Length: 465
Image 1 (tube, rainbow, N blue to C red):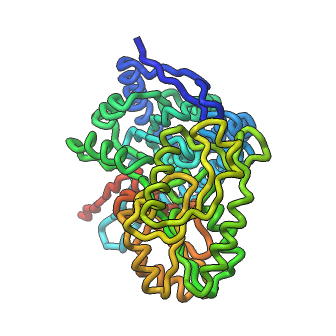
Image 2 (cartoon, rainbow, N blue to C red):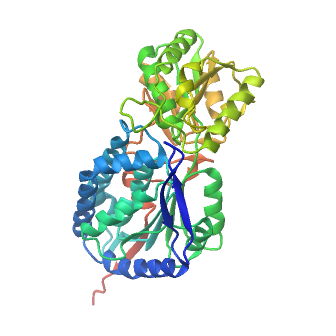
Image 3 (cartoon, rainbow, N blue to C red):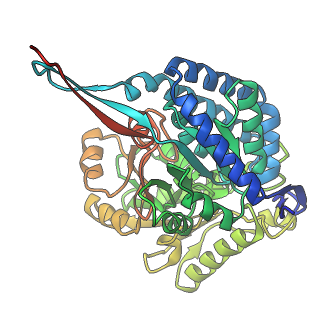
């Protein structure tokens, strides 16, 4: 008999839906269907695959209002923002559809008399996509669409917090006419995920989640020679130079820190501000943060929702308390947020910390919540040293009017994406990649297709008699 799991809504702490995990027989049958369907799917033209995937995206966009409310109830994002994730899903999907021709085209080499030589890109087979709860649409599309376009079959496993997203995707895929077995979802336990990763019918794993989750996937695949794309955590820094547009920097970085209640792998978690503008930046950040409305995310007026579960909020509370015990100061009075916090322990007021240093976990370990530390620096060199003093390397940003200087600083910062005057954003035409403990592999852009295909060389010699 299948084991079940409950989705506890962060809105009210009640069971929202209950779902069964797949039985081992269902799991095996799904992998067999995927392996068989993939062989036929790979033989179809790119145009056919693109048309089917495009229909799937269109169907999901048409459901965006229902999907957004469904998302809010599952993971707690304010309803005023949830539709943006479905729109982002479509933007990224269509961008990758547009890039597919060039990304999947054979690679030609120099002409050589008597020979025809080129490199084709072949699908890997069955791609297992393991998607998280914090951005279940945006993170999964990074792998689903290019994998399908490249001729792979996809088996999708979403977090147990957001299972309705994968169910909705499956229904759209079926209605769009994707062949049976080409796109499937499975609700799985952790033990089952490990077994699927180790299954020889799986040719690639695309995982988005925590560092520890990435290590678990890596261990499960250790006996197999398959690639694992790992999009993991971050402790993303920002550096505000003296020549920054300060109002714009404040507005953007506060949003980058507190959007989705800080539950973003590429959210802003530490800010370094040049001493010449430090006081003005901090004053502006505090004034803007105090305007957030914490409350019921189903209310369109709410701008800050709960964390996904009480344990996540407790983790952030502990980080903040430990930092303050070590000398940090909190600048946001929680009293105005007290009524909302009475809704449940998962509701947490935002916090800005100053007088922080890198001995504090809040400046070195991922918080994944509505807190940010701000440090004063005296130079570009000090800012670079601080930004690089981390085991993570997902994104980093600089706020300045000097593009040449931004590039020079960026060349020295250890990160996968370097922003100027922007943060907390994925451009689908640019590669999305982490370094250090932020992951391995790449999604998005034409480069992302390389990780979902394998090269096959054709070396054809003509015999002239």
